[in-house]
Image (cartoon, rainbow, N blue to C red; front, side, top):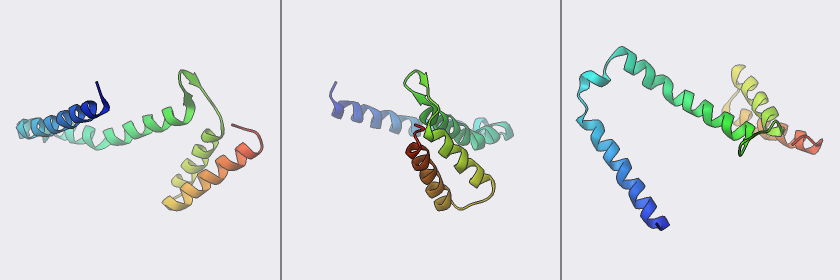
Length: 103
């Protein structure tokens, strides 16, 4: 299978998924429980992606400068810092930890 074929198949599947969404009866998606789950699901998926990208290198668990940067970013977000401040502080933290030999 070529890359072009794979991309076209992925596009067709994405379109089919969207089309099927319109066919679902409203009573199945308008419940309180469904709304609560659909509201929280993106945050849970993003948290899982962040953990995998930060602390994993293939099958191995790696604790390096990325973890330190993530901790600093999380603390700044908790304290209400702006997005750009969080990103710059995380990058500076990772750089400094790598400079001293961690990661």
